[in-house]
Image (cartoon, rainbow, N blue to C red; front, side, top):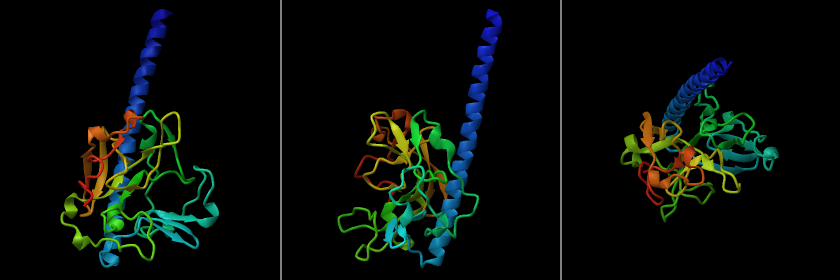
Length: 242
């Protein structure tokens, strides 16, 4: 009986490891597919809009127009996880193919995950510096009529090393226990890059290429170190952002 129990435990452990590895591999494929589609959609948008990048967030009469979709006014204030989003209404809505899927990698870190929208989760962030900058070099998170215009592609000195999109998340700051949630922007100060694939973030560059970038280990959020949420460089650095 003891031998049978031992064998059963070993088999269960083996199946768990194999299943987790398979899930991680499939999650990597989803991340890669989403990043590639965002990169292709972003490049198509630039070509159709005089090579101007798009805002991060605009306050509209009909609701909040995020870079990835419209959050209707009727949905504002609803509990997170049940909020509605119309991805087709966002700046990139007509440029992202229907194969874009919620990224399951956010559930693999061992840290509790809290989604924001009912459709699933996007798992990626936009480089807010591309949406415009103030005179002090701070990124424009909310675009108003008086905001600086978004950057143009031709203004980038090194588009091949300027991140346009990256896998992203943040550690929820109002919880006693570590909880990670979606976050949709990266800038020179936010700790929101998610190295969910072997400690590296998957990125799409402004040139349209995609790849991996390691996180600066000194920036990883200490409240949830296993989640690998940090930055490409210390706060205040615009490495890979300009």
